[in-house]
Figure: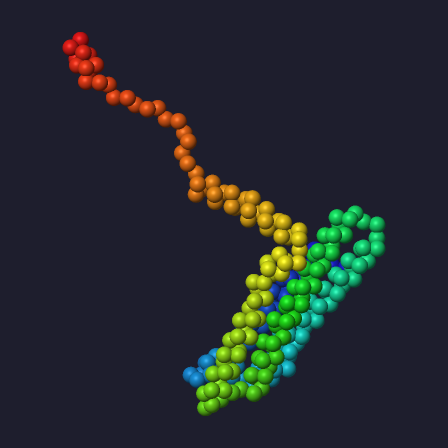
Length: 210
């Protein structure tokens, strides 16, 4: 249903929307000495509470990724019933398993931070209670770090659930880079060079006399 040209148009539109939205939302933040960088405008607080974090940042990406992963799973099951080569079926199964596990990891790593952000905006902890405030900031840091794992976990998910990807990684790391590193570190000079023999003193004297 979607061509490559239409996909590029959608990608360009979404990039422009993300840039404009980030600039507009970032202008609503204010720096306070005790709380740090927080949303200070009441309108943007309502927007972040009821639309940005629940829908645009949390619910919409999760639903979109889950829907397309279910469609991929349905497509693979439909392909298995068709008369296709066995290698094609295996590759489709592997890429579907990789997509499904990626979506599960995305949901598990994103939802906790989204839920806490909605809670912290609606029920901010005042700095007058130092222990609760410190626990809240620590929890926010931990959940944000867990959310950032989304951007670095792809390689490990694919290498766990895809035998073909593991073989490719082994070929690249062991047979290519390891051999190259071994050649650079253990390289010895085996070139044959002429050995210059200095003439003896007697020969030099005889030549001088001549």
